[in-house]
Image (cartoon, rainbow over all chains, first blue to last red; front, side, top):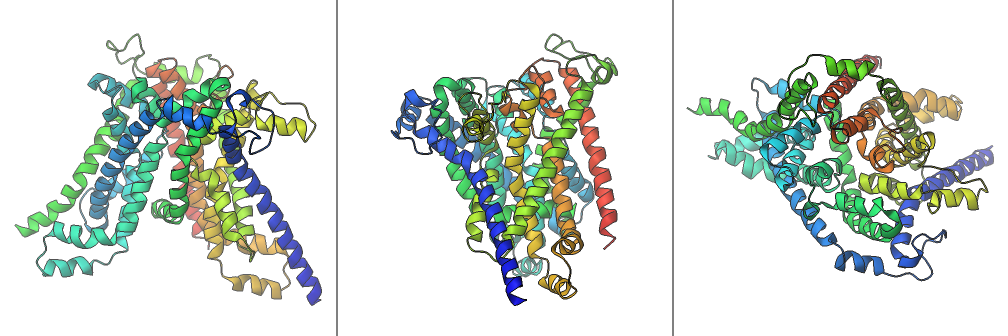
Length: 281
Length: 297
């Protein structure tokens, strides 16, 4: 009887392993595929071989990317835009989230609710009116135009996350600081902000990722190729795939690796923030 | 003085965020409402005027190719197929990961990978993998399975299937992670008690796992539905803007096409409003329903 139960467990474990291995292969395969293409020599990009590391592997595509293409320029543009968006997002969310967490004021519930409603807007709905506004303001083909749009994308989520985190910090800490003579703002700045660092990191990561990996808006607003961000640039490699396939593969690896590492390291926090935001509504 | 300050302080804190939200979200929203009643297009960019409900009429009744109803149907298929597979695969993998097995964290990391990679890179990579002659999917099909190659991106049905496969690949890790969190919070005692009563694995799954996982999964599924319904990146980049011949659109990608490909601004704005109401009605009823079920246990 004991043996039978043991055998049953062994069988179940074997099935579990099998399923996990199959899906792990499916999850990893496209990444290996990209790695493989990025290492192929230029005349064998369109190979029908399925080997992961090609026989005559070369870094030619990487070299061409950095020396022969405006890849570094796109990267600079992307970093610049993402940096400004992240800084703005963190500051705005840190301030607004604090007000939503600590104070009672008229319009509070309306504010929180309207932040939630914006999450139901169709992805492309605001793009058209915003595009027309940018045309009228002369902001098409400028970084400022993209930054303005991006800064609002992640903001509702960031404010909810910050509010949720502040809620877990005891109010007594600020009260103590106030008794010691701190102003209201100093109590927030000197006591609460340092305690909220984990949430600030998540909000920063989230804002960064929305702008680092955004294609649809950038493709419409940034028409001049000097202003392109990485997604728009990479798409042109892919569009005429016969010649640029290797460059695309090399570039997408370089772009993804830092983001993937950050994401894996912080995924636990991201999820708790996500569920917090959705459950509390 | 102090009392007055106290009342003012939260407004000062909110002001910057409120200005951004009003300027970049609420004002454009109102503007979109106005546009949806107008005849604005590239031709009437400066001298546009309000023309009433014409654009809405066109959305529903204009004999266009593809029609609103076809795209709506495709959007439903797209959303339902994706979210269903996300949840099934996600919950299944979470249950495997929740067992006492070796190498758990390695599997977990590998399985989150599709979620961690930027979406546009996923989409473009899969587009390459679906290439007829050199894409690895057809190579696997012909070399290992001995089947004829599939014209993935050249015929509408296969192209639509290709996009769905891509999006399933990219979406299951989210559900897996959420489900894993939910499973870990279920106490072992329930299962032990069921074992003593001689319950089968299926009975345990049906009567313990599903009901206890439900409160965790429902918000995730609601989010998942809204995200999938709204996901323009994948469909746009895998099919290169709705190829072949605008046959692979869902509603949001068709709005993008109408606005920035066909320059029908008024029409695109009206279509956006219709989509917005569909999403709003769905979210409200779904939230109400799930709240009702929440009270049941």
